[in-house]
Image (cartoon, rainbow, N blue to C red; front, top):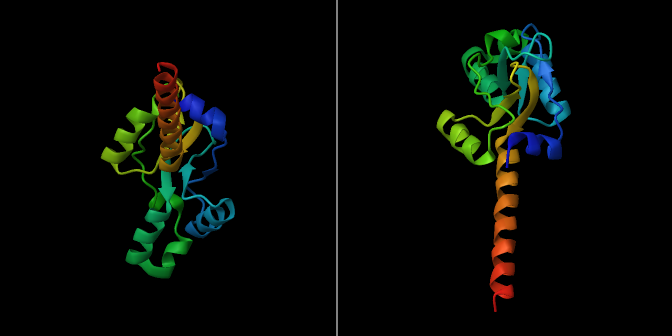
Length: 145
């Protein structure tokens, strides 16, 4: 399945945060939205970075409570693994595993943000594909008798 199909099913809403926002703002947004990462963007269309719960934890270990006042830009991951809408979930699983990332922004041909997929989205999609294949094989075997 291609990522554009995954986004049609799950929705293409992408929550972003400014690099100037504080970690306290980030933590509040992650809790409010019940998500694990936000795309860092100045304008909501371009990707400046990504920031996740892991980034917060790492910085807390280093700086303690002072972390909450820090700007997102200072703790975000600036080198973001992205994918086009035409990428398949099977290929993205490999990329996510190799890169050790759990969230991948989806960018169109003009490098504009059109969605985000998590490892949960990819696994759910792949499980659906496998179930469809299984059902097709069962039907084939039963009809062939």
